[in-house]
Amino acid sequence: MSSSDRSQAADVKGTYEVRTFGCQMNVHDSERMAGLLEGAGYVRAPQGADAADVVVFNTCAVRENADNRLYGNLGQLAPKKAARPGMQIAVGGCLAQKDRDTIVEKAPWVDVVFGTHNVGKLPVLLERARLQDEAQVEIAESLEAFPSTLPTRRESAYAAWVSVSVGCNNTCTFCIVPQLRGKEKDRRPGDILAEIEALVDEGVSEITLLGQNVNAYGSDIGDREAFSKLLRACGRIDGLERVRFTSPHPRDFTDDVIAAMAETPNVMPQLHMPLQSGSSRVLKAMRRSYRQERFLGIIEKVRAAIPQAALSTDIIVGFPGETEEDFAETLHVVREARFAQAFTFQYSKRPGTPAAEMPDQIPKKVVQERYERLVALQEEISWEENKKQVGRTLELMVAEGEGRKDDATRRLSGRAPDNRLVHFTRPEEPVRPGDVVTVDITYAAPHHLLAEGPAGAVRRTRAGDAWERRTSAPPEQQGSGVMLGLPTVGAPDPLPAATGGCGLG
Image (cartoon, rainbow, N blue to C red; front, side, top):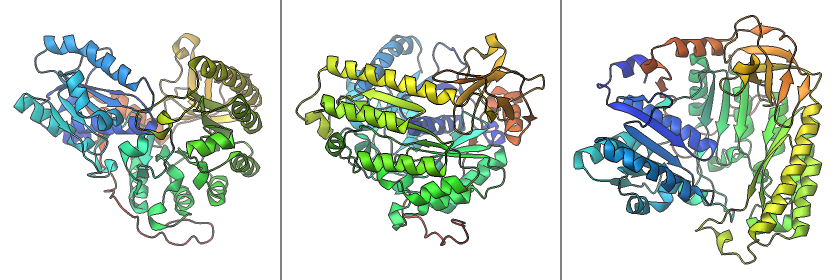
């Protein structure tokens, strides 16, 4: 739906706000929820507004305190809703898929509960709740339509998420996501590429391919090289400057993907590869289907093919039965892999997962002590790896809202090709988010780099033009929804064989 279409839609029904918890998939789902609400006649509530007319919670069920966070937020809204007749509250996402009727029992002021498979029903359910004056709880057990067919209010004018699949076929013992998002469903490659091309036509210059297990893409058709072919095809899209993807799984990470990354210029030298544990014994208990040697072998191959690649990971500390020796193995892998960044978590027991019923749950005090040691080691490595960037000249894509102190320091912020965050001196020439700036790195901290000298070349881009168009448009037209590609659920059409280094057509 274009901005002009939406401006001619039904009279404005009120304001909305979407509050997001969880992973990148949830962030992208929230963009769809916003697009649906705008298509139904709502406008985004101004930042800092006390309460919108419609508040939507897009929930996560992975962490132990997910329930507490949701009900705490709902409790804070209860008096506001009581004082504002007509205000509506909706709860969607993974926790809604899991808890269903429990949410309305604990928070009877909630108007709508919907799941991960029927996001597209949100406006209809809100209207039904208003007309019937009672809560609407509708949880679909299977995907009704591929989410990318829904209108989307993108948060960025220059960067976009693109889903290649939904769901997950893995059975990790600590994870409840497959139960809530279902089995993996792949999009047709032509639909993915059509969406990317449409986004590029709008001015987007960076896309991130999304999947719960993104590199398992193509499993429906039995083509183990489908994901590498997709990466190579992205390399042939004019105007697409940067391609990233998340999150892969070591089990499915094959040599052809490494080759595609190394040989496709717009695929960025960045890889997020979840480790979870460095202990092969714990990995077996987690049902992760790879072992320490396999993981380190992947890292070694990536380093050989893409020497400048920045690697990041996820690590769980304190999985049931983890011994001090097991934890030492995790520290060993961290030292060997030298991640630029690690997202570290203390094991969180989730009802409904096999790990929650395992014996030898680790005492909180032990988990905390191990966690602090891991964080200290990773901080040291991150800083050392960032120091290696000092003296390098990097091309940054200027970012929006990533430098909290930018105004005070007269700096701007941007992302290097390997996704490192760089704060740089504001050039004399006007620069917009989405534009590209060349800088020399002068200082490194554990979580960011500085370019303190004058910026080099500034390249104004179509992405910067797109940002300028969006921010100069009237508020009701900013962030227009898009409906792209007409994706479908099920097995993708067979991909043409790769010829001459080219992937799918």
